[in-house]
Image (cartoon, rainbow, N blue to C red; front, side, top):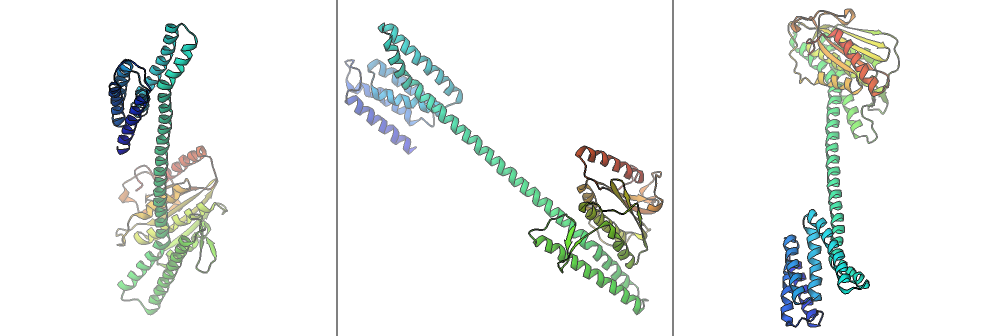
Amino acid sequence: MRRTVWGAGLAFAMGVLLIAAGSRLERGVPEWVLVVPLGVACAGVLVRRRAPVVCLGLGVVAVGLDAVVGPSLGTVLVFTDNLYAAALYGPARLARGLLMVTAVLAIGAGAGAGFWAADWRLPAVIGVQASLVLVTPVLTALLIREQRDRAAVERVRAEQVARLAELDRRAAIAAERTRMARELHDLIANHFSAIAIQSTAALSRADLDAGTVRKIMESVRENSVEGLAEMRTIIGLLREEDALPGSGDEERPGGEAVRLRLAEVEVLVERVMAAGMAGSLRVEGTVREVPAAVDLAGYRIVQEALTNALKHGESPVEVVVSYEVGRVVLRVWNAVGGERRALPGAGAGLVGMRERAALVSGSFEAGPSPAGPFEAGPFEPGPSEAGPGWEVVAVLPTEERSPAAAEGMSGLSSQVVGLVFPRGAAS
């Protein structure tokens, strides 16, 4: 605001100096009369930003009065600033209208002067002068206005890009936290569930001999050591800058890289059997190499299914790994007794297994099943409480496919799962 006031005062002073120097047409009026339209035009300069339309109105009034009593050069120069401010700070429609009006006035002034003087050279001189006074300020303001609007658009676009980058960063952090939680759950739950069950059995039985207690304690120690080793493994992966999460390759504390494989689920079954449950494993088809992501997902799904069986189920536990064309089908069945084991659970196991299957474009279902996986087939749906067992089925594709093919295979996998879990039976 202070700069505007100083600018208006400077314009008025320069205009007065021009009037005093004789930069005007003599009409026989006192010089102070010419100061009046100059003051009106300078008053418009005072409100050029806050009220550009008022600024234009005062400028038009000032130049009209000046044309009657003068005109004077100072008032005309200040009027050009009135036009400039109205086109720059006023509405866009007003700016475009001013350009057309000033262009018409400049052409009309040149044509009128030529017609009045009957000289073809006069229109060119008057037209150029009128264009400098009328068109040039408006055209300059329009160019600056366009650049300002373009800068504002770019600024908004930059803010939107920054906002999207922040949203992407937050989504990546949330996805990484979910992945870490899933990995920690899969790595630890199996071992500590076995420890809890075995220690509970040892504490609740007073008739156990020293040999049995020692065997239980050895199993507890083995699970504890394995759990701690795997905890150190995942902490090491989190600290390692070059770690590739989800690749299926993990590092033991000694530095040896190890890859979790579906072919090694026998170790998981043996661990469950060591915890006191009867178990069996059956491999169908020809064992072959599968992608690392499928290897890891399949291993973790079987591990979590066996952990749930250990925590909540009864003997026996039966695992089937079927190597089929283009996919691997995993089925884990366990009996469900009348009384469930009283071990707490957060329900994250089923969610984690479903997420792991989805990450490799597979399908996952879990629910009551009246028959073990070795005798599985289509069955009549019945009440969920009536099933003597619980079954987990995961279908994992093993081939790279286009999105359309993946969608078709996902539908086929859902049909395979649907044969085992009728609608309404899965939990």
